[in-house]
Image (cartoon, rainbow, N blue to C red; front, side, top):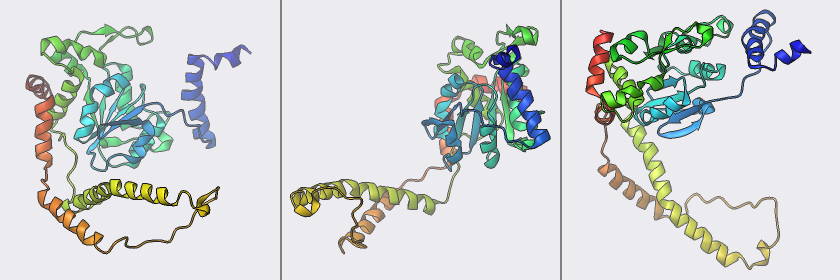
Length: 313
């Protein structure tokens, strides 16, 4: 009973999760139950559950995996500039690693400077003792944004001792960047640091470009459909008002089969084409260089970029 109860403790479950199950997977081919999907995704400015990774914005340039949810929220504005933010709770779940593996875009990793933070980066990029048999390592698709020891030194961030299990070695959490708020007058130091290290590494902060005609096709379809929505809704309401007292429409039914209408009115298609052409004429295209420049204007701290760029060189 004592052994049984031990598996209900945090330490016991960690042993079961990290040692017992991987061994059974590797030796006996058993399938490990997937842990609950804990985490959040910021994609094109909107917050989603982590399972959203299966269907992110097609113009996203890549992903930024963040060790903690609070810091992910700090950098969430970057999701509107082509980088989908993925927040974990420490180490990335196998679900997250599998979904990222199925994609082909780059993955940036933002983490604390400590043993666990370095482990988060390695868990995404490299095979581990527990997952070598699953083929979910991302290899050179992964870029380390830090924090690293070099960043801690060049920014002169205050350190704290690690937990006793790591023998109290110095560490700095991402929240430690808060000291830059007063030193460099930064409103959002985690965001400023992330942008600075991305710029120092030569990364583009913008969605990817796509074919202009394909872009117009998608937007035109939405524009014309949305433009008709009010008219269609008013027409439906008027129809219902006219037929609501007829005996045919009293009571209940499983379904109602309506005759398919290919064209509601012959004059409608030419009108839609004319409207679409007018909108196309007014369309202004924006390049990724313009979006990148906009991002830098909003988020860049040149002093921070200079410090980090010198260290990278």
